[in-house]
Length: 368
Length: 74
Image (cartoon, rainbow over all chains, first blue to last red; front, top):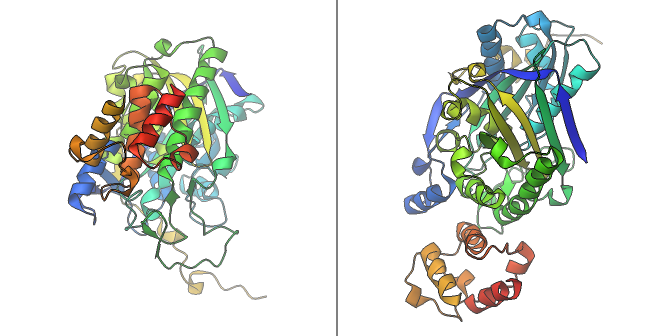
């Protein structure tokens, strides 16, 4: 069992950044009545879309920089920066390395990427918390970021009206408080085909970008996101309730011990079914789905930023956080969060201009 | 149970329940799509507490097949 139990470490700040452009789902280029029907099921009314040059790292930079400025944490005290995303700026180097530079963090900072999606927040928290165990690190930043709108083909009714772009920076700090973080992580890679972008990696390097009509009736290329809704639904409704039940049993807790159950914002139908199956009121789920859509690894902390006041305006609350999806991968984590750790959601169109390496002439001449 | 399935199916497929019978091959109807697929799976789960596996659902054609499947799993 991949169960984790950390003490003396706590989440001390969370800051989200979203693109400025807001897209109404009903304005997308599909049949209007179908979109309205879809909207009732998914619960997504608007999503945020990055500009063509704006990346997940750009959003992550703004989220992390706002977090650093807002908390006053010294940049040189940040000992680790983990960027968790499927949408890195380059095939190499890791986006975390570029972000270490952009955020003016000290060279005494471990920076690397993790390649995960919807399950990413519990994984990222475990990864960052683990860094404290055998180090002198005082603070670490986890950035969970995704630009799903760049992967959802315009002609794909199963993805385009569902996904949005966002990034969230989470500050994890060594603490003298009696804080604890617990997590349980799982993987079922037999479902790797269920949510996949088939091209763009090294498996099919020369895949065509030509759009075709796929067996599900949607139009996309091999470089676009494919999602098999019924397979994902089956995975979610079988494995996620089991994960949560096993976590509760292992930690000798009940779902009633948690004030909020922050679920990955897959869609409203899935959230309702999970609440029914795990047996808790749907009102316990912090939401960001309606305004921001499914934002992959950003969705759990974004929902907390967006909706936390409903749970604990003045007091710390116990939060269960559960991510699930592409991989297929799933994880659950618990933490006690104070209301003053959340920052206002920032809107940005900032692009890292020095990172635009578009032509050979963008590189300095080096003679060999 | 059959009556319940027909009423719920009609709501999902936006048609009158009288247009659906035990022989109706509901996946062949013009309003059938992936959204309807997911809605039917969650409807069966909510109403009967049975999760229809994707591989089983592929073998179901008619409303009668669906009702028999639910009956067999209850």
